Length: 339
Image 1: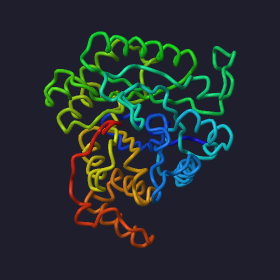
Image 2: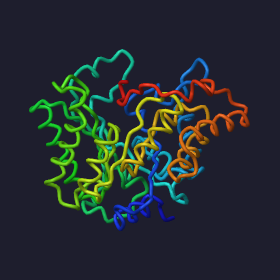
Image 3: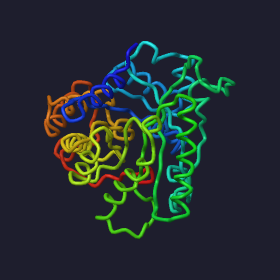
Image 4: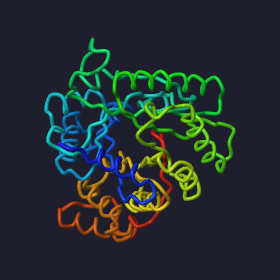
């Protein structure tokens, strides 16, 4: 089946300033960050892996997102074995690396150290579930041909050099193996010697500098970054209209936080939103996604969407985490895995 992601990417590339296409991804790759606690709680216990997979199946069946991002092991189960994407316009994707700044284990101390590059997953396993001898990757794949590659710059020459070396290796392997990727760039996870107001420019410059030496064949489909506000988003989006910019969701926060974030980011140049915890921790993830789609397609403003969401929860017989007044308030939402 034709994938909505491919259609939207093509439309944006044809009409970089006029296209109204907006890509929504559900990020269900948190098992490569949090481990056992990734699926969230139900009552007093943590949900199981099978319950996590059931959530993924439900979102894919709903069909309102364009990308479902998973771990390589869940791609093997859901795409290769169950083939849930075969007759869906939703594109499967896998987290292609897991840098140390997303190792959010209970009792772990890794988040206090500068991010280091690391890859658990291999491209072969993401595409085929095994190592293959077909170096040209001409054989049909049953997994995913799209991955998320993540980098974190910390303003440290040794660390940032190592990060870029690994990125170069990944790009070259991905091009040889016909594997597409989108690029996630986190804010520094340790003190980088930058004032808060310097971080957006630091990130924008690192992205454009790192990609300036990369030919089209090796460039990402789009970016996934922290939304630093209108000025930083407009600066990056205007620099190269064919470089598609997307935002990450960060911690759950209030419903208004999520709805206002996607609306503001779209208004100032973003074409993609990848929400993980904001969807996963919602009272009704499918209804939450429905509201996101209403917002980006101009049918509801963020405040209206919050009220519509609460009305839908009442009809579904679900108790909201907060009353409507509290859920309409903005909060400070953490934007990295350790937040």
